[in-house]
Length: 160
Length: 370
Image 1 (cartoon, rainbow over the protein chains, first blue to last red):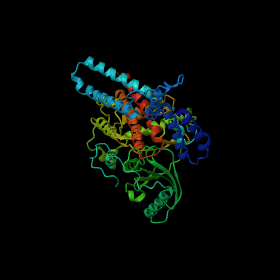
Image 2: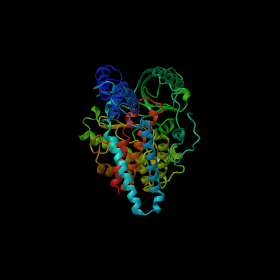
Image 3: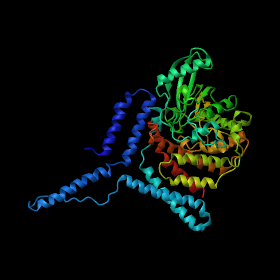
């Protein structure tokens, strides 16, 4: 891809809005097109080219760097890239799994506090509950701040 | 009958729907005729067989409204019960699939002539051999639908119009909750339900749905379920609960409410549940008023006088949290439905984005209740 992901999405949204939707017949069909715009706007706030895509490019650079290093010694003043891929870059799915495993334990803790927690020291239970509440608030705040402005009126009516 | 389930019917939940909520994932499409022309032909044949004469379907238009059942406006000739009809179909890939048309059909049939404005219902079936999915036919009532998210149709929802609609909206809800369901075919819904267990039954029904719909762990849902389990109120009475009583689900004409629609979540329950749902901030149309129509005090004062009981404010808080959770889980259902590839409707992922704001509201409500 030669364009940035945000610019590509902006272009798709503008094309849908200006060039396509005005020519679509039917409220439902236009509503679906507005739904596509809304989801593109949402993706724009969270997406970037994937780790897997970029890491492969870095690895190619590293290989070239190592090979060039053996050569540039005989080329005084020649620039060399000297790139090294960072070790152990997790993929998006590995990060997602890590988050889900952690959240699953938080869920188990919430259930435990609501049942077995009744026999534990009240102050400690309250402290744990407060930490969990703060964690949830932080996660939700982040999710909301990276969400696009809703377009339910446009989606429902098929017009803006 | 569609999608038979082995799960037993749960108390308070219409027996016809028990199949629906428990049946797991519906297979995509099946015999459902997505094609409008095919549906049109099948409907004409069905109506003709019903009246023993040729029925012509003159127009057949899908409406953009509704996130679950598919709604069509149908004009027919030769069908004595009516010429302007609404066809509602529960597609096998829908939000709450698999569906049954019977709870909505039976409740609307029972409510004919009550103080609740409902469309006349003409026919219903869960037999997929007819149109490919559960369906019911009812009168197409005149009116427009003010929506909770603003827009042109809501312009001028104030002054005399607002006051008139507020009266109708509150009066119809009180009439629904005063309705003597025990004297109708709905009496069987009361089996195993009491004022003391109705909140617990609702919590369990929605917990079961949560477990079925969740695609990853959701700490906020666990926190909400834990709070609800600890704070269950006793119902003042058992009543028919609409389940989605709000702005956006009624028709208006000349400042009057002409029909309450979308009865797909109807069940027997605590009447305060409907109030909690109507009180949600999502349906205030940016006005701060309950469903954009009345202040909380005005709403409760008029409702209490008509319904004949005082609304316990703690119970109301419980049902607001319950309603927020129910709304969040409905968004979760939309995400699941889309992710499973059952439905490519772009409204589904759009709805799903609202899960976090709803969960944030639950958290704030719980914080305030401490």
